[in-house]
Image (tube, rainbow, N blue to C red):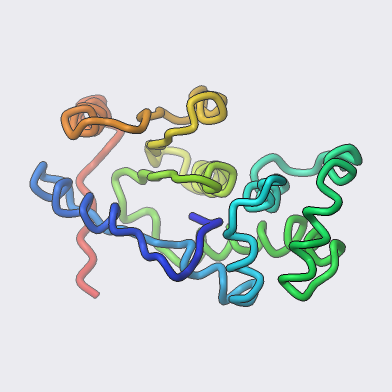
Length: 202
């Protein structure tokens, strides 16, 4: 999931797929962050993908993840210079950044839901890196809303922030050993939460 640069495809997902298949799980990786640039424009995507002090790459997903909430004026006061630099580099206004948070980001989550037949899968896993937590939570919640019986596993190195999602989704703490991933998948499989997935022949 975003927010990441479109210049760097995830080799981790490429390595994870053959491991899962050796364990008997049909797997299909999705690098959905690669599509965000087509929705926002690639210049905007690459600027937001940088790790800014304001963590704007997380901030733009707050509405999609948590719904309507009051604006925090202190956040903009503290990071005003940061936001102005981002706006200058992206060729936009601060109002445009708010529109991404309030409109474009939730619509991108809808795109992710609608562009894939998620009912084909027995389990959906998220492998989170920096600035992917809130976008992943937004998509995971949207998936659960549409497919309540679909099991979801989050793998994250965010020790504190990710723990807040533990009540909703099982968390696999990064860095993890291969046997820990295997055990997490096996637990879901034994519980009946994960069913064999339909292979994609396209």
